[in-house]
Image (cartoon, rainbow, N blue to C red):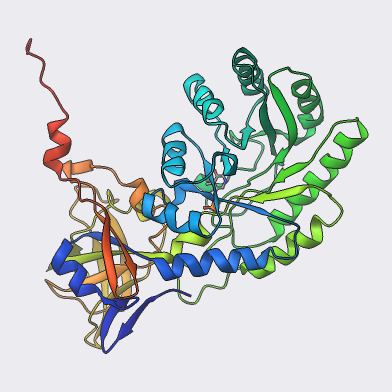
Length: 419
Ligand SMILES: *Cc1c(COP(=O)(O)O)cnc(C)c1O
């Protein structure tokens, strides 16, 4: 469910007609719907309402825009961060430090110090080595860092290989069959307090089964750790729930996910936390683009060349991902077309032989489900600037990230005087 719908033949974001945003802000532009974000946050909370005091930390990497984080902070969400930069954003959005959890295999020395200085809620340790390093730093600062050990359950999430994180060959977490031994070693260190387990097996999961398998393995690990005399009070079940990128796609609902979690974790007696990203933000955003021109191709389908490109929305080029494409003011005519951006790479292709609304030069169109892993993955490739972001709330809207022109990026470069 989202708030990007046609009204009187014109696509709106909530009560704002998209042509108005295109005219005032220009294209391409990301547009987010506050009502959709809030709705997704509440549906997710509701899905977990049978659990005792669950902690929900939004995966900031999905959409790190400050205004988006602020909306979720108001809904009581914490933040799952994977860099010092994301931690700064979470804090800037007034997310309480104890609601911040820090994941990632490559936390640097200075990022560990930064997390300790901010007194964040939890470090999810991704290796034994990281635990030793954090303990030394924390002990020097006279602190004890609250930690969970991220385990790699060796479960196939059955998603795209590049966003699968829970197979033995993936870089994330420690092998679950060594977790007991590593947990015990880390629990003996002076600078850290081992309080639990974290697991996250991948993103855009289309079935609950791999999650349930992973969670069951975590359940056995908790029992094993407790039998060894270890204390386990917190478990972080990560994110990963998929969203429909095609209108006809059926994915497990947050309610089904919540019911599964409630069932599997019934006897755990821990406080549970969650790190949803895509399921909260994905359908709450679109990328608004304008058709530059139509170009005949060697087969029947024309190329629809739009002003958005792979640098603005990387998912199709990176993962072969599908985004529904709709005309903002559909004529009722349909066409079969290839939709491409202006970048000089064949990878800059959003759709091939797509049955879709007919578009002509100057028309506006949207890429749906671009609220997660959209703007945040942008680059300036081909010396294109960064796309602005707009947040809509009812009949008002605001620019929540300025367009960063290519000239500003060039202005940060220097030619040394010895050239
Ligand atoms: C990316 C990530 C998430 C969020 O994944 P979604 O599929 O967007 O829900 C959660 N936790 C960790 C550790 C991640 O790396």
